[in-house]
Amino acid sequence: MPRTPSGPWNPDRQVMSVFRTTIFPGRYVQGVGAMARLGQELKRFGPKALAICSPFVCDNVLPAFRTAIEQDVELRVERFGGECCDDEIERVVQAAREFGASSIAGIGGGKSLDTAKAAGFAAGVPAASVPTAASTDAPTSALSVVYTPDGQFQRYLFLPTNPALVLVDTQVVATAPIRFLVSGMGDALATWFEAYSCRQAFSANMSGDLGSYAAYELARLCYETLLEYGAMAKRAAESGAITPAVERIVEANTLLSGLGFESGGLAAAHAIHNGLTVLPATHGAMHGEKVAIGTQAGLFLTDQPREMVDEVYDFCEEIGLPLTLEQIGLPPDAPDEDLLKVAEAACAEGDTMHNEPRPVAPADVVAALKAADAEGRARQ
Image (cartoon, rainbow, N blue to C red):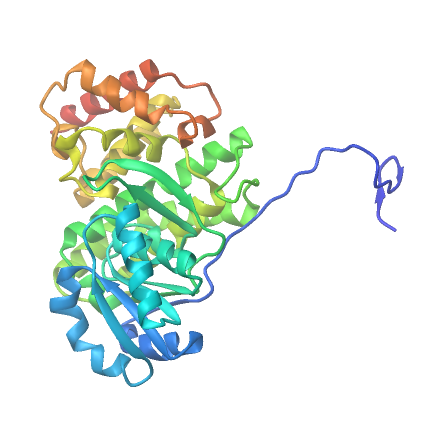
């Protein structure tokens, strides 16, 4: 019989329970040429697969692998409409039902993967994430970020299961524009800082429970991997070489960051990203570029020491992440009214800003954004 320090176990006794939950995808496959295995992997779920692909993937990536995929499954391809919004999710669900799909695979960027995950849940079939760039940590998560049709953040859609499959072809990912790999490092850069804030505040991860110790260590490993291998991986990818450093960064951007954010938790950096999306001028910046700005602002919001500020800014500068608000589309000396709109959205009820270990008001976020921008401009 289990015992407590005060005596025998009593099921009626009121005690504080702390549950720590860690969330994983069903299977993660990474390597050069992995795309040719996609049909073999999808066959485990049934004979028919619907693939939702960005137009670029449909025209330039999928043709090289389609014959190999169709040796194992019957494939129907739908072109992604551009935004992970409710209308697009419903359109994919209807296409899957008409086809009789036994799985839905998103092939492309983060929004197409999020659409596939949401549609898979709604259609009642397994979802597969097949990123063609290591630009976000979206592929592994049981989460879809839903936007309005014009690209403003709307809500997080929490799904009951993670993707049944995450498949990453390193050759495909490394030959994408280098900006995608760098943006992925910007997204991954936030992982440790946000997980650490959640750990300090006893804030919940994406499951609603506390993060596991393993998740916090994976988040730390993500940060350490970026610092050690990020610049080397960028240079190798720019030269067309797939090196161990490239493999490490692809894994950090995709798997370590995905596990770290979902099981460790989100906080200021992603809340600020969400706030930035209310300004149309930022819509040309990639997700990870805006998250990097959120991480930099978070350093000032959470009163990090000078050494940490220098470490983060030096890393961002070395690999080419934005350091100023101007670099994500805002004008120099962005008006306080615009920054307040960002801050109010970032502090909205239910957003992850409230996972920080201190109360944060919109005025605090405005001050942090201005301080981070000034630090970045001083380095130019």
